[in-house]
Image 1: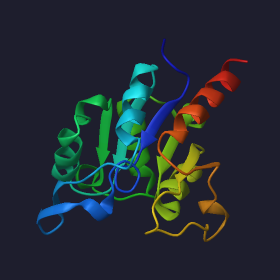
Image 2 (image 1 turned 180 degrees about the vertical axis):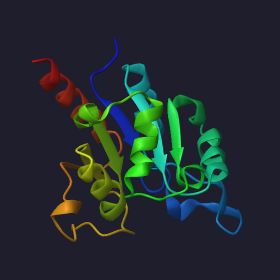
Image 3 (image 1 turned 90 degrees about the vertical axis):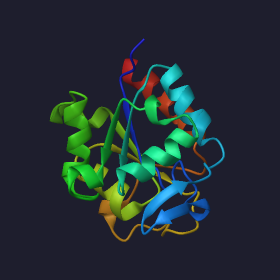
Length: 176
């Protein structure tokens, strides 16, 4: 059964461990390890009927390399990648690109959950559009304290699999 909520999710330090990245040249990533539970998260979200879009800043080939390495590229219903969109998060065009491709109207943005590791990009961008923001605090490489109220997440999780319980809670609230 199709779920009420759609999940937008970042890649670097949200699914893939940036510290493990192997570069081909410049910024192009050949491979990377996943954060514990990241693969299971994507597979279980899909199994449970959620629409899932990758919303990430970087090179398309980098994400294709990383996600194909782990059998995940084709699990996403859409890929909104800054190289193709022409702008980076928190610009609304990144989020709107995915929403438009998935047929999500502005009035339904409150049923989109954006998950990411970066308060100033993922959380701030989602908040500006009225999406639910989920901060994955796993990475030690990014600030964990919002710079201002625009960066304050609606929810914080420590590990990728923590999102499953949150999504089920949100779904229950939506149908009750």
